[in-house]
Image (tube, rainbow, N blue to C red; front, top):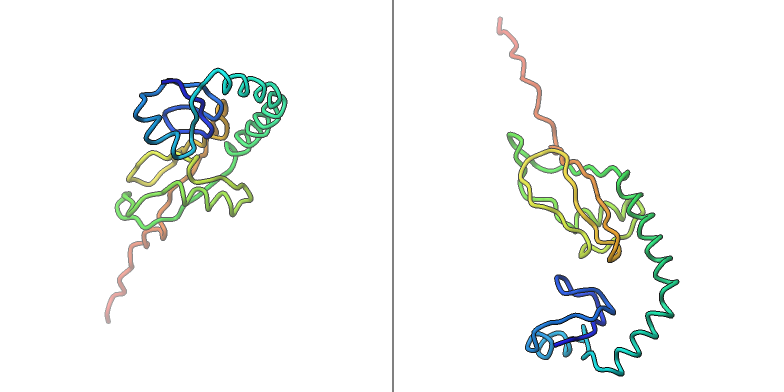
Length: 158
């Protein structure tokens, strides 16, 4: 069944795309939730007209997304976490990355950030979907909350 997406849907497509999905998925989920509408002849004509009008707006949005992606690469993020023997307790989530970026003046929704799972200290990258054609890379470092204490020196007793 062909549908026109109204909103971006993960692993299906982006808004204003005409995609082929199974009828049950379209009729039971996408259309009732307001994510899509049936791709009738009239709906396709309306879509074509709307896309013509939005073409120049999309170019500006994509340029802004690319500028943000360039800014993200050079943004240093450091997370201090509890760790023992180089292994961390817990994990760094997309919510934590979004909050750290907000503190640096860049507002990103946690839903657009994808971070791989890891369990050790070190440098990692996360991906931000800024636009359907633009992906940003977020570099961050995970460090121990408090460095291991230096070996205690014993004082000789007299």
